[in-house]
Length: 155
Image 1: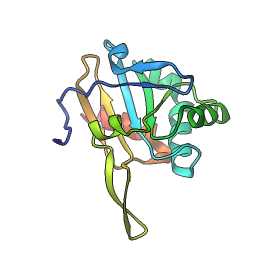
Image 2: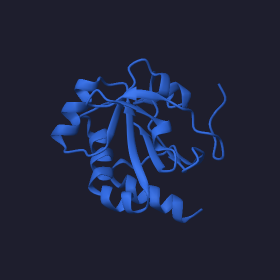
Image 3: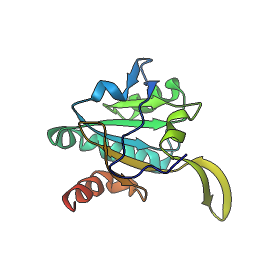
Image 4: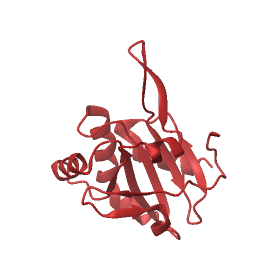
């Protein structure tokens, strides 16, 4: 599979969110999307990233963006995570890693000197036509919203 780059069409997907509702990228045609991939619910980095996006949700929405989070966790895990932190956006369950693989957000990574397979924390900025406008591969979990807007402002 080729690596996704800016200017490419975002791969289409359909998956269930934390409430068991099917969500597809096609539903967001005409809207801008921040699609972020994270390793695991209720872990420090993933919680910081998700809460940072949620705390800035009204600002993000005013800029015309919808947020979608994706991890291999179950719908039940996502529901608990969303409830615990009052997250107000879709968290999609990708247990089979189909979306993760389509976006190149699953692969080999090195943690504490040990190589393993896992989720590569990545954020895609998708425009109204479904084209990838930006990719952030080195995510600052605590300041992710600022990082996204800084990226957009420097384009």
